[in-house]
Length: 370
Image (tube, rainbow, N blue to C red):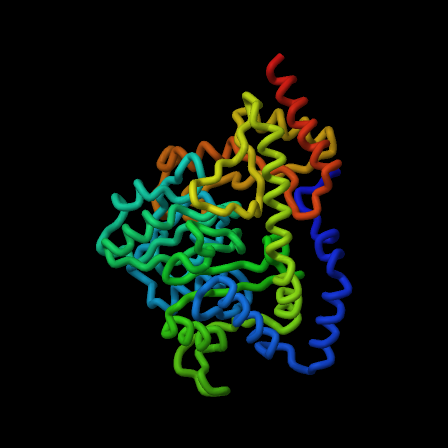
């Protein structure tokens, strides 16, 4: 089976580096919020062009802590996309605010700026655009709307480390941004990890307090906080991967370009679009078709793994039933839950394996055309 991702192979290429760095941590006797975490924060802030980066336990916590640090809570509304991983909406609800879902752009699958303004109310405090599958949202338009209505913009950049929008890095495009270092992410570790980036010193300071139980001084707590800390082992792993992330993303781009060129003439299968001015880093490579069931079954028979992202929009999840959305409320996002499927995409996908994936997709197209 040709897998969607191959973490064993990816981490295997830097195994000796990883073991050396992990051994240093083990021998240091310092395991939580130490020098490796500080170094990671400094290097990521520098790379993304922001003043501050604050490491936390995972990407979900990054969203929750950012919302909390901004004082967003009960009675507030936050606009976001229904076509994303559950954590985006979950974080809004977890701080007591209400997620307001807006339909998406059918080309990029990211939050549609044209549909945002009609959902803004006096309760709206922020917009969370998601940089989906490795491509940034339409940030100029979103930031203009936010400025007009005095709203915060919090990037959910969990799938887009290394992506760019008009020459600026994802993570530097709003008031704050949140990253996940889950193993499957472009920049990932061998467990959970997260990061918040911002050029707002007051926000960064508050998040640093919140992440360690609301404490500025050990055993003295100014407020109720969280236990959300990145450990030194994961920081060491991420520092090692950070050295390679640009090359890995370039390899993803090369693979994506080859997919696009090889599949562009197909009638029933459409490759992902890249919006003008964006650098897409292809966290996932998702194809669109009206024949997903037939094609994915054929690929399974040909030993090609596929994945569905996402099978159910957030506004139709049982957990958000109380918000009152119905099927048909957000038709573009809902339609994609029936059409998109991901094919193998990782930096070390061989030409031979990719050729097999391409051949299987083309064969399935021929069968459908008969």
